[in-house]
Length: 422
Image (cartoon, rainbow, N blue to C red; front, side):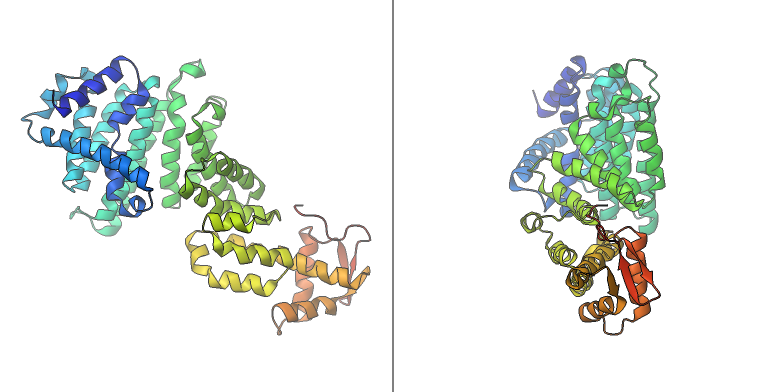
């Protein structure tokens, strides 16, 4: 029996036994797509690359037989139930097109495979729907990156693949959402989160975060299964994107909760993912005056944060400014520069607390704070700017007191610098 026949027999067994996990493995094209996404592939471990190579070798043997078939549809129809023929045939065509570096053709065939699969999708095959959704998004990235469709210019190409992916993934989500089964344990809605996560990837990439809210409202509504019933890997991804969304909405406490969950539950072996979570979690922790250890930042190659952490701890405004300037391009590229910039107020708070401790009185001349700012940050700063900083600290609750006639800061007799986080 040749490799293609064995492959189709395995798919048939999975269908007959309602084995969604095994069917997802057989249907997966993640490995072949990832092997062509060089930026992603080069970051993988040697063990992961070896796994991919084993799958590639198997797919190449299958593909060589597919190319010799006079009619692949007929061959597949003799091996599989009729309602799976179209999905399986188009998936095989997709693999052939990828091996031939015809990525726009591959995308078309995978789209057709998913459209066919959605028609026969059942709860037991939830993993297959998630795997196909993942592969669609990755293949859209590959087709855009490799630029093999001469009928589209660069900007149209990006719009086309992203829009086509978004439309089809939305259709997949609707296929799960349309199930009106009363018993949640038997509902297709249990397959929703994997698809939602792929849509999150796209919405963040195209910077259309408003669309995320609609998905969150649906998934967290009473008509959906409880979030903790979904696979942990999918829940980690979901909480990560929720955390990022909260970051950009200014809901920092919620962001911290979601990102902390994602980081703590993410496997230790997933170095790249844990580092990505930390990129957003560290600023949220700093906003709450929770300082990550230097060893943690070094472990995940986030040395850019080390001096910022030290500067905020000590109220060293100059060090804070220098660090932001030095790593500006990095922080901007990760979308966290403006968030870090807002942490400067905590730096001011910790500097002014030192002034208060040295003065050890309830009435502190504003010139004392001005002198500290001139020494630490900028010789040109004046009394009005100093007063403005003090006013902001009072307004935001970092300092308890009031300014008296632009001469002195009168601090509260009890706990003038409230313990952080507020």
